[in-house]
Amino acid sequence: MAGAAGAGAGADAGFFQVGMPVAGAGAPFRHTARELLATAALRAGDKAAVKRWCDMINADPETPADIRARAEMLETLATESGKG
Image (cartoon, one colour):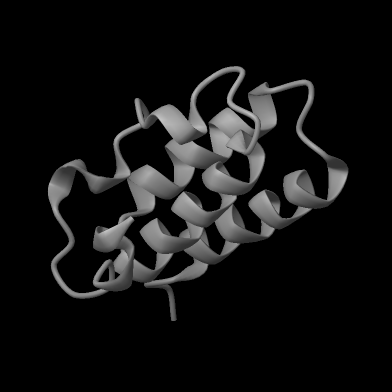
C-alpha cells in the first residue's frame, strides 16, 4: 500500500476504489482494510470514498461491532469537516 503514505497529498484517484482485493468480500482482513481505507480517504479529504467504505463496512453482517462504531465516527467526521 505504497499510496497510503501519501494519501493526504495528491493520492491517485484510483487508490480508494472499492474493488481492492484485500477489502473484497471474503477476504480475511477485509474489515480492517476497509476501516484503514476509509481513514485514509478522510485524511485525503475524499468524503465520497469515506462514505463508500463505511457503507461497505455497515453492509457486511460479519463486521465486528468496534469497527462498525469507528466507521460511524469516520462518517460523522467526514460530514462535519468543512462545516463551521
